[in-house]
Every structure is written in structure tokens, then in C-alpha cells.
Image: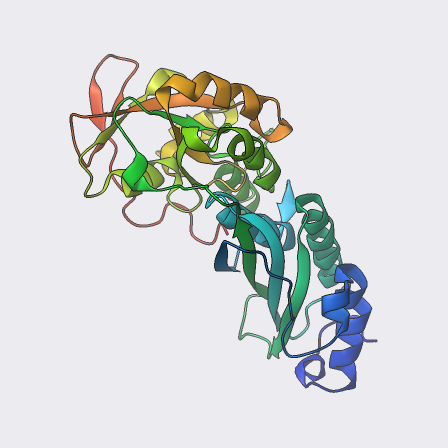
Length: 336
């Protein structure tokens, strides 16, 4: 097989089959995939099913803490997990530019396979397209995911009440800042890496034993924590007050943001979740989150309030109040 992707790899012929068997089936091997049908016929569970899809165009493809393949699996798993679903099945569509090295493609596939195994999901179907040089930037991925919501679990904005607490499961802004450093080749001495991680195991710890305490969950990817919280409050009869003193931000992130005029609240995360929980049970939720490796830096960052309905604001270190609005424009394009 050629060492790079050629247009013939997308023809549906011999090279396509070699690509599927030599890389995708090798790393994603399971009974559904090996059937080789046009669809995967899956087992279903009673109750509600969650279904999500997302596309990944990140630049660069490889970064400290992961690559586009790991990111795609984590992003899809996390979209299901914050809906309360237990992720089960994933599809993957590959759009590959002619000339892309097969070695890098296999490295990405291997990373996807190991991340899927960590998350307990199976990659059961997919598609491959090859486009001529110049028609794509090396590689784009699309993943879709299916998960099942346990009976009785309900998450909704309608459940949020004043007095509820807002929790973030770790330091914010790590992913976007790490991508910025590598993309722009900034001369910054740092060990900062993307926080890209599958969160379903950690979130299931909470929902399995304290489902009634959790009002809503989201993963603050594009637009960051600020935009996600504004989505919670938009058109609602409550507001959210953040405490700047409790925001978990690494020194490298706050320092670089300060130099570049950026705000960590608006920078993407790929391994963090925001939870709104019953204020009376917030301490127990925090204990469960911090017992998991991905939640050891979890923090209560704010409270749901009756005043300022529909708004998010922050009590600053100086003692004043600052309105936290939705992101306008795009601080960091192609971060996922």
C-alpha cells in the first residue's frame, strides 16, 4: 500500500478496501464493523436514546495532549455524557486530502481506538472520502454518537432554581490556549497541554448516585464557560452570579490571556463540564467529582440568583460586578 493517500484510496476499489482493512478495521475491530454493511445494526435499550454529531477541523492535527482523532472521540462522548446518556456507539467519517501520510492516518486511528476503549464505546460504522490536493486542509473528521439515558434521569433548564450552585470540573481555557501556543509557535516555556478527555465515567459517578441533585450539564467547548452559562440563562427568570476568586485558571493560561487581551472565560475546553446542582447537595457532588482524576480541580464557581434574570455577571476581585456576555466573533478559530 502507498505511503500517502492517493485519490484511488477514495475510489471504492482495491486501495479503498486496503485502507479500510489495513487501518480502520485493524484499530476499530468489532463485530458490527466487520459485518461491512451499509449500516450497523445495533442493540437497543428501553427508555430514551441520545444522538449527537459533530465535525472536527482543528489545526494543527497533532497537539500536546492529543490529536484530531482523540478530540473527535472525546467531543462526541462528552456531548452524550452531559445529556445524562451512557455513550455506546460512534460512527466516523473521514475526509482526507490527497497526499496525506498513511503513517499519520494510522496514528490518528490508533489514538481514536484507545480513547474509545477508555470511554467504553465502539466505533461501529464509518465512511472515507479522498479529495484532491488543495480541496481540504489535510484531514477533516465527522463523528456521530448514540447513547442511552438511564430511566428516571432528567436534566433541564426548567429544573434550575435560585440557590443552585454552578460547578466546573476543572481548570478552564487549557485546550484553546494549548492550541494557540502550538499553532502560532509562541516562544512560551510551558507544560500546558489540551485537557481533551472523555468525561462519561466521571459524570456517571454523579448521576448514578445523585441524579436528583443535578439540574443541568454542558461541556463548555467553543465560546467557553461564559457562552455556555449565557445559554443557561437566556430567556429565563433567573440569573447566574460568578465569583472571580473561585475560577480555576492555570497561571500559564491567565498569563498568556493577559498578554494577548483574551479572557479564559471565553476560551474552549475539551475535557471539562459545567454542572448546575442543588445547592444543598453541592458539597457531595464536589466530593464525587474530585474522587475522579478528571475532576480533581473541580470548583464551585457561582450561584443561581433571582436578580438579574437572563443575565450572567461576575463579582470581581475588586468587589464590583461585571456583566459576562456571549462571545462575539471568534477568539480562536479551528480549535476543534
